[in-house]
Image 1: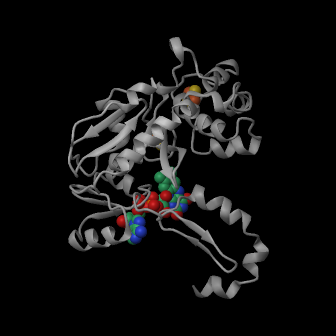
Image 2: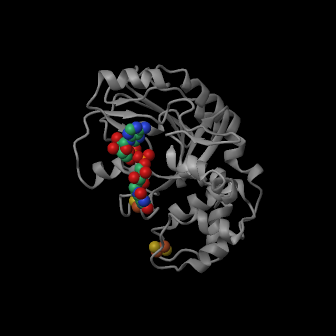
Image 3: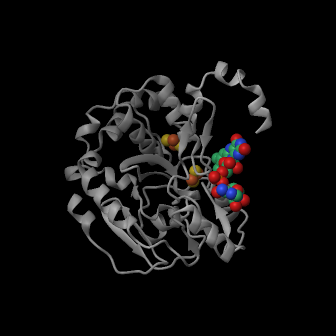
Length: 299
Ligand SMILES: Cc1cc2nc3c(=O)[nH]c(=O)nc-3n(C[C@H](O)[C@H](O)[C@H](O)COP(=O)(O)OP(=O)(O)OC[C@H]3O[C@@H](n4cnc5c(N)ncnc54)[C@H](O)[C@@H]3O)c2cc1C
Ligand code: FES
Ligand code: FES
């Protein structure tokens, strides 16, 4: 499986989108600015294991893993493909439920636990729940009940009931270090590093790599819609059917998601996610904040 990752695609120029999808490299010529990852997975690649429920980031049926390089390390996070612009996964590793298939079609330990604990009835939510639990298991193979609940807070199940799913989450066999995603990691990191050498993308989906490029593109394309996480803008596309001829993505700006902490302040980059900020904010004690009320209200 890993060998396929190094397959190279066509030379697509600066407007294209390039990413790894499971064990394949995907090279796309310029795409419409409003192209969404879920539509690409289901309609173009026929990877229909990833489901479409609400199409607005609420239900988690469309959960995939997105692997990104941050300071040379590969980090995977569960994300909703329905409100993820295709251009936002440029330079990333996208992992869908199909990639969890083991040798000879064997179930992944996460899937096996769901089966053993009867965690699936109609099955519509199951791929999304498996991907969310897989992301948790990679970091916490023996999660607490609280960690499981946080990991599943973006995934709705209408028919099974959550008790079997929670039991499954705490009974996943195996060691994440021996998992195939861990085995692929060196190859994936190399492939993503190679992609990072590509020129910053132009066209309908502008993707600056640093702040200077972002400001220059903003000046040159004042009508382009600025997009950070797309949890709001994604709904303008899916629900309001709002035309979006050009988009300026901020998600590839180096350091834009950086969070720094000094004795006096926590500085959260405009591209940082809630998940990145939450542990930092939790660690900063209430006492620390209460000592400095003036700064909080004057900044
Ligand atoms: C399931 C779900 C639940 C939600 N729940 C809540 C909730 O409980 N409370 C809540 O407040 N919101 C909620 N939201 C809305 C949304 O998550 C928030 O508005 C979020 O803060 C948007 O951040 P984003 O990075 O995804 O912004 P985007 O969708 O990328 O952008 C939102 C707006 O900000 C602009 N923008 C983005 N980055 C910049 C920048 N650096 N400089 C200038 N403009 C910029 C964009 O052009 C756009 O106008 C929810 C959304 C979803 C899908
Ligand atoms: S389809 Fe419901 S969150 Fe994406
Ligand atoms: S198993 Fe039917 S919605 Fe979860």
